[in-house]
Length: 596
Image (cartoon, rainbow, N blue to C red; front, side):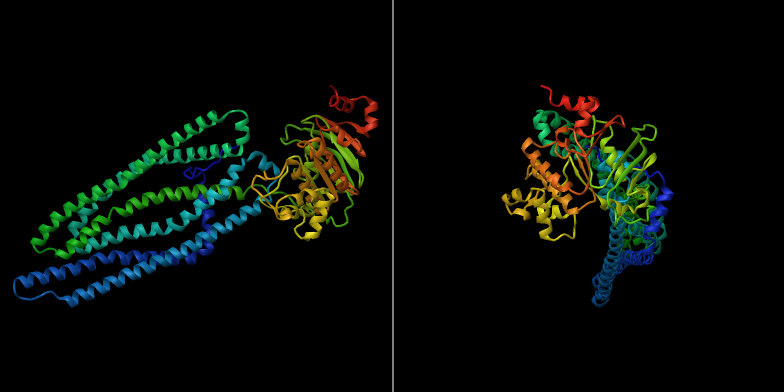
């Protein structure tokens, strides 16, 4: 199983380009984002002002106590009450503003991720087969899940946190200046020292976070391999080998996780130490200023609160920088995927009146343009004919039907459908002309009825059941628990291989195609089941142009025409008996299957 790229801490290759693309994505919401910034700034400002107001309450209490001790007055509870009411209102307004900005940014991030997932889903259906040949499935899944999730979460929090942190840093410094310039300068001197500590810790921990994500992907893939390949692992007695490999990967993940979390966890204790050191300095200097009457007790309290909060925005900005880097790296992978070359659909013809006459003319093709495997393929098939394609593994049999369905574009030559180039038909309509029954059956987690209806989503229950009867599948379906309403599990392991194949044939019947393609449809079943499947296929092929790819030549002896392929070329053409009489390549393959 391919390893998945799950590392959100990758470096961004095109920083400016990615930022521009991301900006275009969220530009439609710029009014909402600006509004969120306004509320974030308002919430931060109200939170910043609060300690100074609270200091005024402290000053009132202190002044009242001194006056009471000296017998010249008492505590002004009315003034304190008014201050506390004002403070409470500020806290409430700050909380409301914070709630609104979070609501706005959550809405923006969710809408953006929804649109991206929708575009990625549409893009998947527009990509050529060659993309999936070169791209690991895990990488594509990672884009749809991990990368878009990373973008969503970072977009939701990072932008407003940047604004809040910067406003907090500037706002706190302004409030400190308003209280006492000297103390503000003393506190500001801690800024470069705190920044240096943050940069050192981030620099040391980042590589371990990268390794943590890398090893996490490996452990995840290891678990997937163990689950999906469980029967093979048991068959080859490889449990210890897989367990040792898992333990090795898991140990590396634990080591990287410990180092990253430990170094990252050092930031707050160190910053607290710096903050406490600054607190001690402010307390001593502030006390001296209070004795000299240069500052009130309440202002000292407010200043100490500000000084302890002063280093928090620095640590927040450091963490946000990592989030932004992750967000841009994830965005870049999503945008790269969305910019992949799509299938070309220049066709305009409809397939409404197509009969099923097919001709291959001088077809040349190679998955790699420098390595041609179909060299000069020519064949003419009339509607309703049953054509068998045989040959050794790697001869190009399956490639021919892939070209017929236009999964790949030809290097040279053309394929005609009713005398017209398949390129001239609308791609979506061309696909409806064909139905395939493959060696590897594909069924999904759902009821048998839903799986069969996949061939024709508009089919009634009666049409589905009639198709199952034609495919000789109705009998066994009735023997299953819940019959047509039985739910197939994710691995479809609750029915046999032969039953799966009968269901795929029924699905193909329901699609009612003009051209039917059977690719090794009986290779994975026993002889008795093969007979059932063969009978079902014979019913399906009646009146339809059919292509049968088979290794078991006993299944194609009654074909109207047999194309014998070897190394990308047709080496023999004819019916079964004719080819046997020639005693050529076909006869050699056929006889080898019955030799003792």
